Image (cartoon, rainbow, N blue to C red; front, side, top):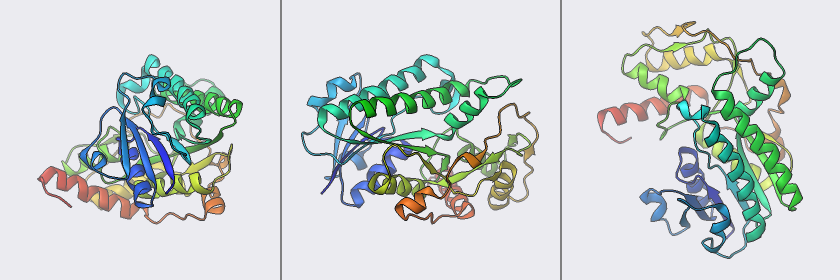
Length: 308
């Protein structure tokens, strides 16, 4: 049995990653500030509470065994106003580097760093003029800084570093301020949804496909290579939104154009969109329409107090 460590193990993505790893036969050391019962009661998962602890203090709490990989997902302020909290985002960068130093201490020589498409949006913003920065760029700057600093710290400590650039994840179990969950929730409750005109390029990936891609990259990916985690078929945002509307509530009217678009349009040409498939053999299984149907059923069940 291989051993792995996962930070942010109790988050939306982290819980599914830990569950999937344990189902694949891994023993997981889960790091977070709180844990649901399904993590605490799983014999293949060892939960380590990191509340008010620096990474350097955790070496004595982490079981002294051989580790195959360290998955760094922990990140405070991923949605809402906290994305613009520069103190919080700078601390995320520091913690990323500190966790890589922890890997050196416990003898784990492979790190998968979960970054975001927002880091690429931030990078493109820096090359653009006449665009006003929004608070979200503080979050994106943090992700970009942690990527480069973390990769450099890893190289200095002879640790293999693999960044995964994750596009917009959605799926059953999510409860956040992110676009898909918020929009489906509003459509179900007959509330108006406001968007930009939606001509900027976008991509989405269902939760299980994202998790399986990340695990495949950890197992077969090349060190110091970045991997794009998405559907691999980006298109204008409005096409995704209209497809979502037609599935959830075809009679509703989307507020396309209600909000002016002031950001930068990401060029997906900078990514090797098929690299995960080519290097690991993993192919996504859940289409956008199928993922939206499952997510909508989940949100409706939450609304009605039933289980799916």
